[in-house]
Length: 500
Image 1: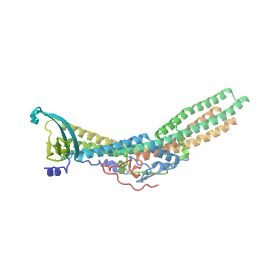
Image 2: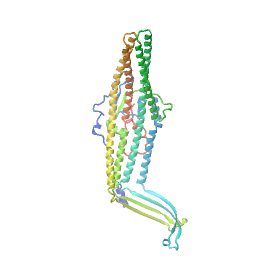
Image 3: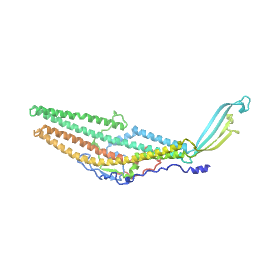
Image 4: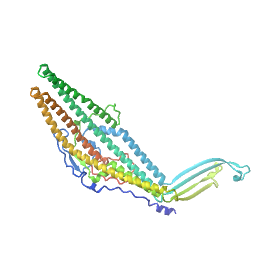
């Protein structure tokens, strides 16, 4: 019977998990119906360099290094070491690994327990054949063995599901890692953008105050009416009123950056960022669509959850079949401690059992239907995650394309507005144009200059978004995040070494 059971245990009921294939259209050479141009537009402004998309180029593990900012690199490395969000995800991974080991030990191996005991009891006259009964102490020592034969693979499916849970949590850690580094980069870029906007507003305010001094002197000589002075003072006050909201946003951004870094907002030592300290990379990697699902940690986590749901179907199916159990014990029992391991005190037993569900109100079959429905839900969620991944890349590619064009146009508009303001200022001082024309030129330059700064920051943010959408290069690190157990699913193919 044991030999037959071991033979049968070579198979397992339920579906054998296979990695889902990508949609046929995802095997193509691009992410959008209209392929993005291989090179973006170039603008005559800081951050306006043309960027080239290199299909098939690998992504470095420390992808933020493409911005060539030592303070940013140091901040991210320190943040990874002290981020509570990442620490929580890593602890959850260790929990999943320990759960896997516990299930493997409990379900796949015999359970052996030693038992040693002493019991004081009074036996009745009928039992002991002693008049009035007998008071005695019973000593026993034994080894007990039990083993559930996994004939239909239910235990192995449970272990398979636990290992898939480890895989899912491992990729969740990678997703948290990628999200954290991306948040740090984009927040640093937002800080740099706000600093540039604040600097631009202060430059405009300085120019307006200088103009106010000129106008007040003209008013003192009777060359212009007081209404012109009041208009200029109003303009200065309005420009000055725009500074506090920018300063508030900058302070809040700094606070957010500190929290992402695992620090209190009041802690010192947080570096400051401006656009001049960042370098816009001119060569950008672009993974092939067929590789994206193996590189996105959220897709891999969703795949592992689908694997876990598949294993649950196998467990529910195995519960419909007979359960086999082998038990045995060997030991000694005596009424005196000194006789416990001597004399005719040895006892042993060997047993085998079979349990076949006959009637349970349809509960087991309902559980299997529930597991199958959960698998269908996980499969739909996996497809949704894949679609979201392709959308993220497509959005990033289009942002790179159109924001480069927007910066090119905005740089032209800002240059023309500045030339117009300089000319109008000179003419106004010579009395050739009215104050209204000067005011209009000032407002036009302020708007175009602020928009130029925002367009420059968008180029950096678009670059970070592309690296995040492509998975962030986690596969090029020496080890996955605290991984100690080999993934149950097929590992991602090893990409080519990262190129600078």
